[in-house]
Amino acid sequence: MDDYRDGLERHYLPLLRQFGVDHQAVGWGSSESQRLRFGVLLEVGDVRRASILDVGCGIGHLVDYLSEAGFGGNYRGIDLLEEMVAEARRRHPDRRFEIADVGAAVGVSADYVVSSGLFTFADRERLHGTVEAMFAASSKGTAFNSLSAWAEKQDAGEFHADPLETVEFCRTLTPWVVLRHDYHPRDFTIYMYRNERP
Image 1 (cartoon, rainbow, N blue to C red):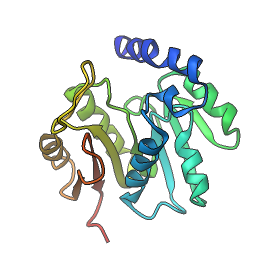
Image 2: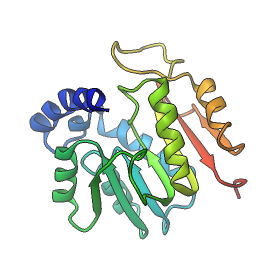
Image 3: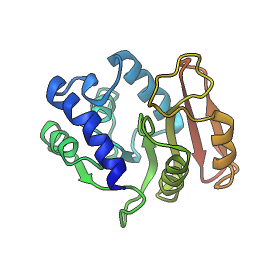
Image 4: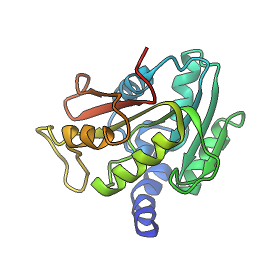
């Protein structure tokens, strides 16, 4: 974990210092692409009054998106980086943010557990372990996205998961799985459900 966290610190903390609260502070190429992914992620279900656990919350940009959409549920964000959590708390003092790893956190649960951009510097093993922990913490469903191995353009040093292999792994946890690869050429989203989707 320390090597992984150290790598995240080396990548993201200079961006945070350079860009402040901008989308670039968490590595997004544009605000539009970040918001597009948020929109797809939250189509996992009716989240308007649900409890949401945001894994890899960064500086709380998903809270901005939810607030604009009239979200009235319970939000909780977790991230490995103390500086990110501190900035998220500063930006949204009325929301709960914690320094935590979803796989090690005790008592972390929500209706929907979601994550956007979490796996950019991961690998297959970390993706599988994190998704398993996310799904275990959800009572209704889980949604996450990843850069896609189907993308024609792939940047060196970034992890691009195979969409079908990822679906097959998710199906070892639940038969109720949806793959979305229809909104961005370099990205896919997966929804996982506890029960058949209504």
